[in-house]
Image (cartoon, rainbow, N blue to C red):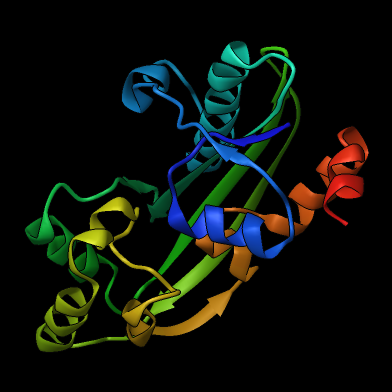
Amino acid sequence: MLILASTSSARRQLLTQAGLGFSVYPAEIDERAVTAGIAGDEGEIARYLAGAKAEAVSRQFPRAFVIGADQTLALDGAAFHKPANLAGAQQQLSRLRGRTHQLFAGVALARAGRVIWDHLATAALTMRDFTDEERDRVLALEGEEILSSVGSYRLEGPSVQLFERIEGDYFTILGLPLLPLLAGLRQHAPDLFEKTS
């Protein structure tokens, strides 16, 4: 049995398109509280949170393989979080405008309440020097769904119009380093592939 400990529609879609059968059971953790004492950069925080989410759900379903994932974003060492509202999204996009930021995606696989595999991937994204009008038009097209995205954008949506250059894996940018995850699943849970083929 495979469980995704996330409600992210992008992550669900990636696993479905990869041909995997899975259930969704979101992890109920307070991310800020969990990472309050963690020393390290945003990449290490993404990796730690992915593991914490996987472990939390794995304790409830000890026989299942549980995928945990998390994304963090940093601009010149400053961390970004999901915006609280559209005004917050406007502010975040304005800070990112014309600059390159780093996006970190952590993914972990847990079983019986402990992480058995994890991976951290990084991408560098450069936004255009867009106008306020372009920003607001894209936000209107994205709507409330943008509030679930760190950085206030979705590359699989109209937000892609705001970008100039992307360096890194597309799956990483969507929040799930898929190819490393599939390799981890083949190593630890090969039966999952036999059942779906």
